[in-house]
Structure formats: C-alpha cells, structure tokens
Image (cartoon, rainbow, N blue to C red):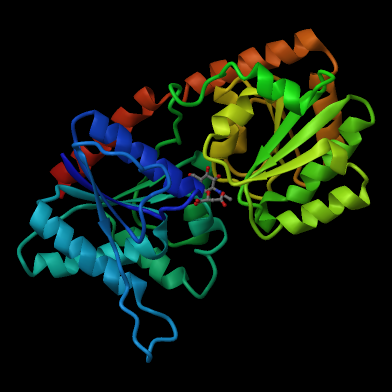
Length: 375
Ligand code: GMT
C-alpha cells in the first residue's frame, strides 16, 4: 500500500507511535509518506520506502496566527494526487482529522476518493478535544473519518462519553519494538549513577501538569527513607523547574539527576529498577510500556488506559491519582527484596511482549485494507 502518515513530529507519544508505525510499515514493503512540519524525531535515516514531505506555512503580516491547517490540507492534496496514495492515516485529531477532511473534499473534485483513518491518542480527546473551543470540529472530523482507532478501551469509552460519535471505534493498542527496547548491558553506567548499588528509579515524560511530576519527587523522598536509591528524571517541560525546586526543598538533590530530553531512553531504562508514572490522565502510557520492555516494573496511577497495561501486583502496582503514600509503599515493597524485584522484572517483560510490534502491525494493515475496501 501507499500510505500517508500525518502526525506531530515531536517526542510526544502520538508522534513516536506514528513514526514507529510508519517505519515498521516501510520495513514490511509498504511505501510510507510522512506529512509533517518538520522531520519526525525518530526518522533521521534513509530508507527506500520512506518519504518525508514538509509542510511549510507562509507568513504574512496580516496573520497573528499563520493558518497551519490550510497548509497541511494543501500538502495532503498534493501528496495524495502526485504520489497516488491509497490511504491517509492521521494521528491526533487536532487539527489533523479536520485538515484531512478538507483535503478529502478537495481531492473529490479531482475524482480522487482517499479514505482517511484517524487515530485518537489521548489528550486530543480527554484534555484539548473536549474543550468547547474545539469540540464541534473534533466531533465532526471524527465522524467524517472513514476509520477511527483509539489506543485503549478506556480512550474509546471516553470518546463516546464526551462526543456524539456515530462511528465505530476500533481499539488498536500501542506497541513496542523489542529490538530497540530491551535490557542492554550498561553496568558501567549503572555504577556511575549508583556507586553503592543503590536502586535506580526512573521517570520519563514531557513534564506537563497532567504527568504529576512533583508526585514522583514526593514518592521518591518516601522511598529514600527505607531504601537507598537514585532517581533519574528524563525529559523536559514546564513542570521541570518546579520539580527541581521541590528536590531542593525536600533536600534530595544529591540523589536526583535531571537528564533532559534523551534519544537513547532504552539505555537509561536498562539501568533502572523501577519506573514511576503517577499521571492524572494517561490514555495508554507508552513510556511505561517502553520501561516494561526493558524489564522495569511500573508504579503508576490507575487512571485511563493504564490498567490495560500495568497488571496490579504482577508487573508493578497501581494506586489512585495523588496517592503518594500508596505508591511509595508499593515501590518499597518491590525494591526491598531482591527476589521479589527480579520476579516483577520478569513479569514486566512478559507483559510487554504482548504488545510486540509484530503482533500489532497486522492489526493496522488489516484495518487499512478493510477501510479501503469499504470506501
Ligand atoms: O503524554 C503526552 O502528553 C503526549 C501525548 C501525545 O499525544 O503525544 O500522549 C498520549 O498519546 C500516547 C501515545 O498514544 C499515550 O501513550 C499517552 O498515554 C497519551 N497521553 C495522555 O493521555 C496524557
């Protein structure tokens, strides 16, 4: 198939999923055309089946807000027409689904009928999408998509709850490439971080409010009272400064490292004993799956799609959002006993294998075929 993929080209979960999906489809012999405003973060190599079309927005003094969505629709029209695409797959509803709708209408005037698949990722529904500023457009463009997928059952339920959706939504969970995310021998790195054999805890996110990153620091302080440990905070975003300040206030700075945005997250996860995801909302929790694939158990909140990934008492534990004491207690329970920790690590990997790329990729391929045939 010739597939157009539209996504945010950033480190965010939806962009990562879209890019990894495109790469895997290309490896499987499909021709994949990325349509975004800059080269996706994980697409920095050459492959004969991968193409990248940059959307550039012309500036004009009249524009306080340059019309990105129009530039995107125009680029979609261009790529579909001249590359003869079979299907457009847009990730994150805003504004990609509505831009695709417009492109579809324009293409129809050329007698080209391109089916559009929209994948809902989370905040496009639970946070931004249900805001009245965007809701009518989001509802309309989801209903106008020829196929709709969501990354968890919970997100599917939330979509039906918040919007008047007339379409079937197919759940296709996120996936992991075990070739990249697996336990790597990084003992020298582990020794440098934890010279006395301390346990290593990790958190990776975009440090937005929804991630409750300060909870990570509060939980860590409680763990430190019982178990010698170090904390690695990976990523960057608006909450990072508050977390740094909190570390100073709680006097735990010497045990915490803020590593900023990192490409080789799998290397950091490879030296970690426990991953923390206390998010307020999380439609899937891709970062937790990446950790589990590197044999790292997860302490998380029990919100959104996380119960579909993290198995309570098996691959980690889940507590209510904001239950810092509960999460600390469960973390200590895992960390204080070597055998127990090893069992949780094994369980985490086993669970992650259920989300192997090779199992999930055919679900997308079959869905594309179904949508194309019904178009
Ligand atoms: O987590 C974020 O803030 C980024 C966001 C995105 O759309 O890039 O992530 C969402 O999509 C990911 C990939 O499907 C999911 O794993 C995340 O759980 C989801 N985030 C939220 O629902 C908050």
